[in-house]
Image 1 (cartoon, rainbow, N blue to C red):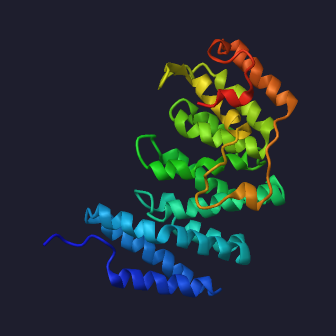
Image 2 (image 1 turned 90 degrees about the vertical axis):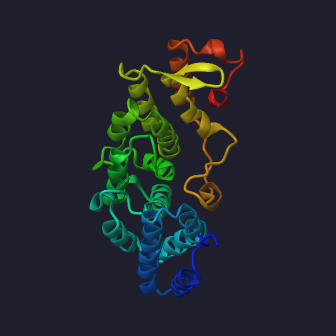
Length: 286
């Protein structure tokens, strides 16, 4: 008889009890829930039980994110920082299995802080958590971890952490994760994001051609998708399980000066020939 690869009943009961207690405002079992989630996923991974791994993740990831996010909003940054320290990417050879959960909750923290307070109120440790992950990815794997890096762009302009420089540094090796981080940077501060976009597209090392349904496109054309995404009707889906635009009553409006600078890049790089005669910034969506 084939082995049942679903999470066993003991694991489900254990996590459900811990999450239920944490959901009622008891922070202590939250640490236990995170540890249980990490241990069970690690066990499934080490034993090659991919179905069991996915089953645990599907069953508990969103619940764990919600409970940890609620607790962070109640208890403050110190609570979340404790988890980042305990499961920091630099503490293990591979990323801890709870990394995507921590990326999600930390991303929410960045966005809320940037929109409700000030860039200076974003803790450097939160940005260093993202940059340490960014430094370790190679673009060939960790799809969900790549996805979880998108909110790093919300730290652009921080006086004590060079978000723009770090994103620029990775543009020549991992353009596919740079694009969405740049889009999130536009939501946070479109003028600083535009400065960064101009720096990247005028960097001589950014000169590859990328496969596209229409044939090949330049990396510059690909990066123009970032501001186009910000002005489009598509709602951001990262961090997952959270409609931050609705919750925070956020609406993006492109400044005329930034639009002019985008159009200047399109003209300089002779991209207009692939666009409608009356093209707008949203037409730059890839």
